[in-house]
Length: 332
Ligand code: SF4
Image 1 (cartoon, rainbow, N blue to C red):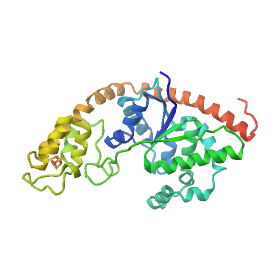
Image 2 (cartoon, protein in one colour):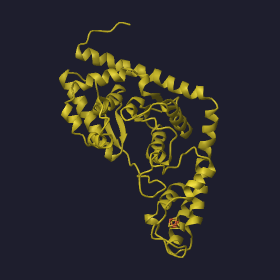
Image 3 (cartoon, helix red, strand yellow):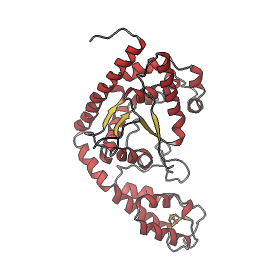
Image 4 (tube, protein in one colour):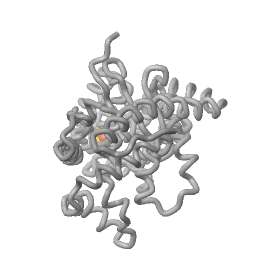
């Protein structure tokens, strides 16, 4: 089937993935493969801008790749690789940094936010983060980048950088990526308050055992107004119900929606049902993941092969970029 175009997306190596990662990105990654040529990158260099220790970097990279494959990324079809395995990205990053005004980078809200978060580690890489991100995208001539509305300014920055480069060197070597605005649901953690994330330990990992998953679900915060079993609840403000809407059959969702409001179902029962449905949903994923995990060398080979294919595209772009600038030709 002819694909509509090329999509690029990257994610930091955060290790074993959780439901927030799944609903926010991975599910979409899998779906996009039907219509687009997809390039999915584990951005380990980006991770270094905020990382204090790197001992777990390798394992986290492997675990994330394993989860991506288990959930349905097809390596024969899509390119899946590690950012640092394509050195051309750092070359393009350097080149693009020359057409990027420093003030534009330090004015970005995301940079200011990072300064607040890690005032003692304002490194040079952190300032240039959006330039590296631009290099990631344009190196592969990706026409489309799936982004949530909140990430739209980053992509606009990438588009402006491409325009600056092409204008400065009077070329069309780089193409402006278009945004594919994707509805990214805000997935709350089991605390029902904050976005699901590992650092807050409010997450549910996809690869958890059924029992671990059940325990996490049973500790979920529900409608805070519903104090007793006999109190009517409000599913509209209950995080447990949000997950039911994604993972439970429609008739069960309708029943909970009705019965919760008249205290016809208790929260314990409601959570048990969610845990059962969630485990059912994750069963095939876990089985495939465990099977893949028996052969770690194959998982690494997927990443190495992805990097080989990515480097071919990247080098072709860099030949054009170097020629457009007028850099002396390279000979191996
Ligand atoms: S019954 Fe279910 S939907 Fe209603 S408040 Fe309890 S956990 Fe939430």
